[in-house]
Structures are given as structure tokens and as C-alpha cells.
Length: 83
Image: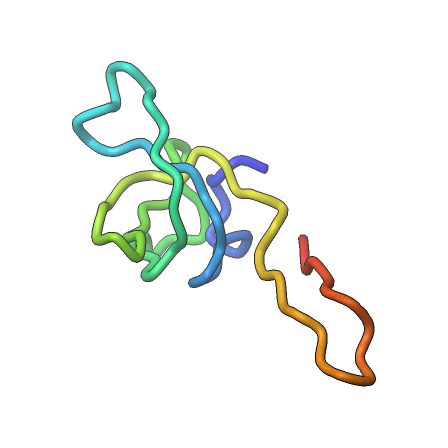
């Protein structure tokens, strides 16, 4: 999934972003979204986010894995929640 729609991205999402300094090479940096900085519902170059590491860039890829939780007694085994 590409990162052009704000509704596809939430804090805690695993994404790959392009940092400003890496725009010419398109080098991707993976991380977890802390804040969504773009206010508009879409952006052709990707929604701008801040990762938990503090790095800021535009989302190029969204991982289908959002959250993995461990099971508790009496619950089903670990599950993946995806779009």
C-alpha cells in the first residue's frame, strides 16, 4: 500500500518513509508512526509523518502488519491486525 491517503495511516503503523535528505536516492527508512503531520486527506508525494525515532519524512510504503499481540489464557493465539 502506498502512503498517499491519510486515512490509511495511524499512529503505531509500521511504514517506510523517505527522509528529505534521501529524496534524490529514494532510500527508505522504516519505523513506527508517532504523529501524522499532513493535514490534507491525500498528498501525491506521500503523507508526512514523524516516526517514534523523531525522523520526519513522507510515507512511501505501509506495512500490512499494524499490531501483533500475545494471547492471554483463554484467548486465541497471537493475531495480526491488518488493513
